Image (cartoon, rainbow, N blue to C red; front, top):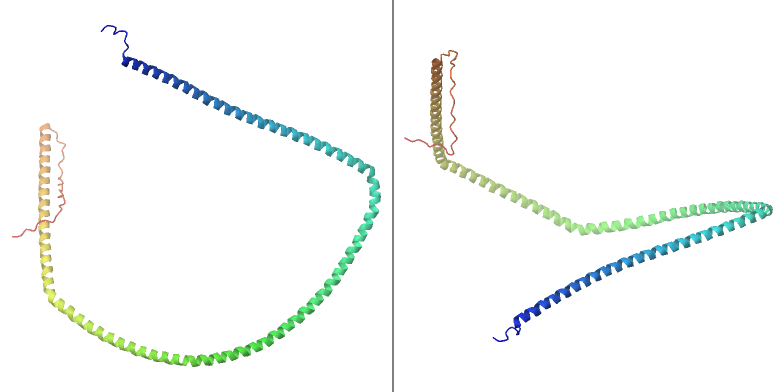
Amino acid sequence: MTGASGVLDPVEAAKDDISRSKRLIASTLDDLTQHHSWLESYHRDERRRAQRLRREDALRRLELKRQRAAWLSRRLALATYAFARTTTAFLVRNGRAFLTWATPRAHALSRLMMRWISAGASWAWRTGLSLSRTGLEASTAGLAWTIRASDQAGIVFRGQVSAYAALLSAKAAILAAPGLRRASIGWIRTRHRARRIVSTLEARASDGWSKTQSAVSHWIMVESPRLGRGLASKVTAGTTRTRVLAAGLSRAAFKTGTDSWSWAALRVRQAIEKNAATGHRALIVRPSTALVCIEPRRGGLPAVLTS
């Protein structure tokens, strides 16, 4: 193809555009990331600066308050000192004259107060005695009147209570008479019924006991042969099983003793022959002890041998 080198391939052009777009996007993302980090650092620095400014402002206000408090304390101390000095000078100048003027007046006032206090105490004493006597007389008269009135009221009340009690007792007797009569009749009927019931129960109990005795004696007479036969068969089977078990144990014990004696005799004979061959004569032959062989335990009972 003529001029093929000067024509651009659309796929390659698209790939170039895509690569340039990717590079542009990557650079934009880098710029955005740097800007975001710069904003974060800026906000952090601003927060720290605001905290530092607030702390410095609080320290400045505290310092101003301390200075004002010191100034006020100094002014108060100076004012107090000036007042105390002026008062002291005034008292030093006019103290003797004041004492000379106030002493007779204080004595006169004290004597007047003593006269008033003594007059008030005597009046209070007299008034208290008169009031106590009047109160005692009034309380005595009131107590005597209360006693008389209570006696009269008690006499009247006792009379009324006795009258009401007599009336109520008469009415209660009238009203209770039919009830008592009915109660006595009911008690008599109940006692007769109880006697009849007891007699009936005794008769039934005696009949039941006699029937029970006869039934038990009949059952014993009927069942005793069968029970005797079963017991005899069980005793016979147990005796046979015991005899077989004893015979088996005796045979096992005899066989074990025989085997042990044979083994011990063989061992002694071998030892004697060995010593005789070596020429050693220090062997002492003792009676041998037979080992007992214990038969292992079986899960079931031994079979009963029948002829």
